[in-house]
Amino acid sequence: MRSPTPFEGRVYAALKRIPEGKVTTYGALARYVGVPYGARAVGRALNCNPYAPHVPCHRVVGSTGMLVGYAFGLEKKIHLLSSEGVIVCNGKVDLKIFGYMFTD
DNA sequence: CGTGTGACTCGGT
DNA sequence: GACCGAGCCACAC
Figure 1: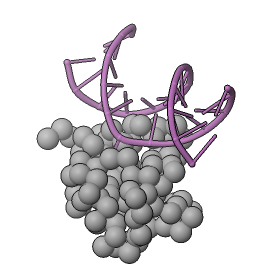
Figure 2: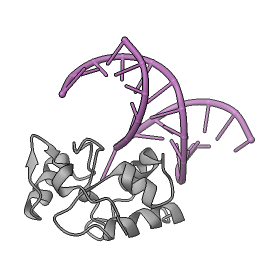
Figure 3: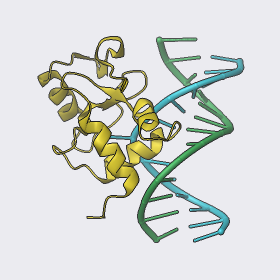
Figure 4: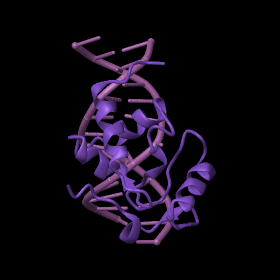
């Protein structure tokens, strides 16, 4: 287990701020942690440190609402989201309804 | 310190 | 809306 870097710590903190039944995008998450164009860095951090379920990494989807990846498997990710009230259609989520933009 | 990689995003065609 | 190429970031080697 590699020690979590400050950057990863900010990512996990942001993840925990996502209300249940909502999802966010790698881009929005990256901006929130202070890295406007670090969407890839965010994804890499989650893939390398899936502290699940301590960190709800399953609430992170692509900019188009499409689920792009999950360390435990996309099927698992989809199931978790639907269990929280998020409607997943064909591996995609409606960001117009479930998209969380870290307004605060 | 340079190179490669990955759960991304955007702009052009 | 789909496909393709380029850009950006943090991290491991």
